[in-house]
Image: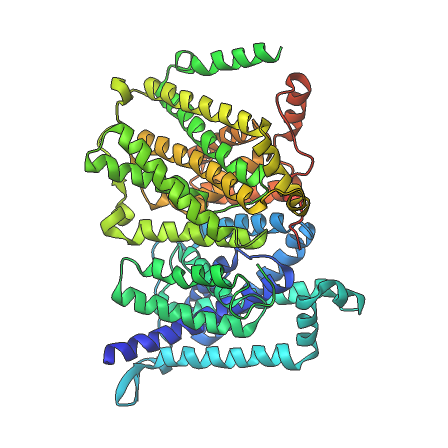
Length: 286
Length: 324
C-alpha cells in the first residue's frame, strides 16, 4: 500500500515535469506545425544552465528562472533566425531542429563533461511532509504545486487574455488569423520562446530528481512525443492528461516490469494512434 | 557509352582491394557499401514515396540483433539470414501500419517514437539484448564454404550484395510499381481517383525499404561482429537520412554518393576532432538551409547529361510542403 502511494506521488511528480515540457511542445506543434525535436535539448540545456547558475552562487529558484529565461532567449533566436528562413518548408524545419539538437547535445558534452551532475534540493524543501499518516518528500510535492500553478497560468493566458485568443485563433486557422490582422509570425516567436523557456525551467526543477547527464535530452524527447501523440496537439488539456498518463505508466512500469518499462510506455500511444489518430483531445490531426 | 561507363565502374569497384591494398581502407570501403545499401533502401521511402522516416536505424538494428541472437543460438548462415530478414520484415510491417496512420509530420513523429521503442528495448531489455554491452558474435559466417574473415573477401561479398541492391533499385524505379509509388508521393488524391490503393502502395514501398535496411543491418553485424544500442540510436537514423538527403533524394545514385560522402566526413571528422555529432548536426543545418536539394545534385545533373542513367525528380523532398 505504502509502495503504491509513493509510486503514485512519483508518477504525479514526473507528470508535472512532463506537463511543463510537453505543453510548449504541443503549442509549438499546434501553432507552427513543427515537431520541435530540440525540445529535449532545451530541457537539458536548461538543467545545465541551472547547474552553472547555482555554481555561481545563485539560489535554486533564481537559477531556475535564469535558466528558463536563457533557454527562452535561445529558443527565440532559433525561431527568428533559423526556422523563420524555412517557413513553408515544414520538413526542412524538422530536420533543422534535429540537427540543432545534436549540436546542443554535443556542445553541452563539451562544456559540462560526460559525468552526471547531481543538483542539490533547495534547503527549504529538504526532508519530508507528513500527509495521511505517511511521509512524502517535500520537494516532489513542491514540483506538483508548481506544475499546477503554471498549468493554471497557461490556461489563464490562453483562455482569458488577448494574446491567448490570438494564439488560439492562429492554431485553428492561421490564414484567417492573418487576414484579421494578427501578426502570426510574432506569435511564432513568442510561443517558441515560451515553450523553450518552460522546458528549460522544467530541466532545472527536475534536476534534484533526475540529475543532469548527457543523453537527458534523448530520454525526455520521446516522453514529450508520447505525451503529445497521446493527448493531441495544440491543447493544454491534452498535454495535461497525456503527461499524467505517461508519468504513471513510466513509474509503475519501471517498478513492475523494469526491463519492459520503455515498451509499456509506448503501448497506449500505439492504441491511440490506431483508434484515434488525432490524439485524445487533439485539435489538429497529425 | 552508358554500358562502357557501367563496365568501367564495375571493374573499378571489383578491383578496389588490389589498388588500395591497405586493409584499413578496404574496410572503410566495405562500410561505404553497407551504408549505401541502407541509404538505397531508405531512399525508396524518403525519396520515391515522399515519406520521411527517422526510425530506420530501428529496422537496421532489428536485423542485426536478430542475426546476432540466431548466430549465438547456433544456427547456420542460411537460417540466420532468412530469420533476421523475416524478423525485420515483420517489424517493418508493424512500423508501416502504425506510421501510415499519420501523414507528413505525423509520420515523422511516429517513426521517431517507434525508433525510440527499439532503442529502449535494445538498451533496457537486458535478458534479450544484453543492454548497453551489446551482443558480439564470435566469427563471420562462411556461406557456402567461403571464408569471409579477411577484409578483401568481406569486401567482395558486400559488393555482390550491393550490386544486387542497386539492380533491385533500378528495376524498382523503372517498374509500374515504382511509378505508382512516385504517384502516391506527388498526387495521392489523383492516384486514388485512378483506382490505386494509396495506402497499400505506401505499405509495400515501406516493406521494400525495410527489407533492404534489414540486408544492410545483417551486413553491418557481419562486418562489426557486434551490435549495441548505439546502432539503433536516433543519431544513426539521422545519419542514414543525411546520406539520402546529402546525395539528393529520389535519384538512383544519390544515396550511394551520400553514403560515401557521410562516411568520409565521419572518418575525417573523427580523425581531427572528437565531435562527430556536432559536425553531423551542423551539416544537417547547413544543407537544409543553404542546399535543400542536396550536395550532389549539381554533379548529378552533369551525370544525367552524360550518362542518362539517373532520373532526378522535379521537387526536392525538403522543399515540398506536406499536405495540409
